[in-house]
Length: 256
Image 1: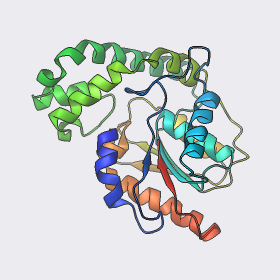
Image 2 (image 1 turned 45 degrees about the vertical axis):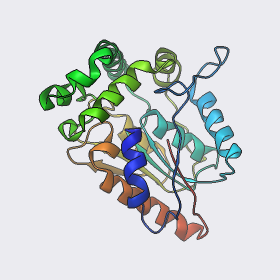
Image 3 (image 1 turned 120 degrees about the vertical axis):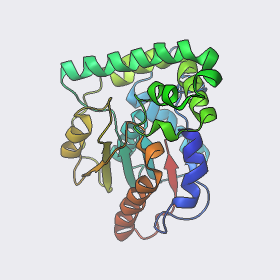
Image 4 (image 1 turned 180 degrees about the vertical axis):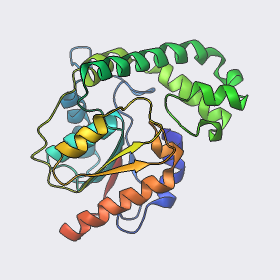
């Protein structure tokens, strides 16, 4: 998915977000990004601290933020800390009922184990479109459109995430934040109609975040930014335009 973002977002971002390349951040412990130190539990708070430190290091103050899954939750946390001008959170991690959380954790664990099994032969197994679509169905509704090399890289990246189990147990499983009263910026909460992982958490967050608007994207999965990048960028520009009406000088953007 990161490759899709890197390839398509710069050309698609609308006039309200600003010029120049976006800042793409891979969260600690995801893909091939180094994990947080073993002495630091990768909670939402700790991960957001790491993102803030990276923003400070790069001289980014209050950006427009697009985040997917756990990245969407961190985008909302940045908004709680007044470190975001606008947020588009796609399938963000949020509160769920115990049965829903058990299902979600089981799906993520099964996907991890399956991708690790497929990783050594990823280049081969992703060549047939039917196998490729089936392998990526937990993440993408339009997986058949994913090029074989991108699908193989996605499988290997998911399999290689060194902190997967700690992220699952520390940042996803216990997530039940309900106090978003500190959020002041425009927020769009987004969920695909074919998202097999998010369940009701996006709808809950849309009710909990002050002024948030809930958007449903037809025929998109958990990674809606890969399934329908043009529509996602429309939402980024919509949120940025709303922020611009409040603060006309906002021009930075960050994607998690």
